[in-house]
Length: 129
Image (cartoon, rainbow, N blue to C red):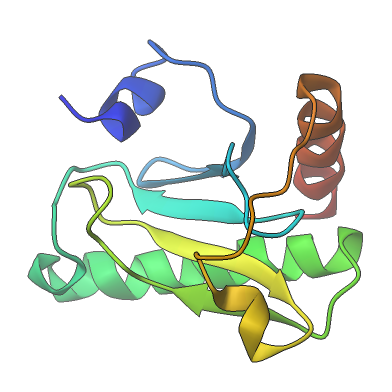
């Protein structure tokens, strides 16, 4: 069972910002930028291009809704999208507030946020979606 499956099952806490019957979005706890979130399908599939077409399309529409909510709360030029797929064997889309291409680099130092800051940010984004 992956860490994301444990989050979906409620076994591990997460800073959830959006959820429906098929998808879940939550803040990354090691963000490259404030507001960095992950959008995932609830059905575990390792590789994004192994998803059924309808699930892939639905994930992208769900991610769009989440990105629009993040934009309302976190000042940025755009929400960058990255799919790496190597860290956790469960499809996930990184949604990262960016002002330049360099902001999408996972080599950048991670942003340190307290539990209270993450909770507050999650609540603001959730309210904006």
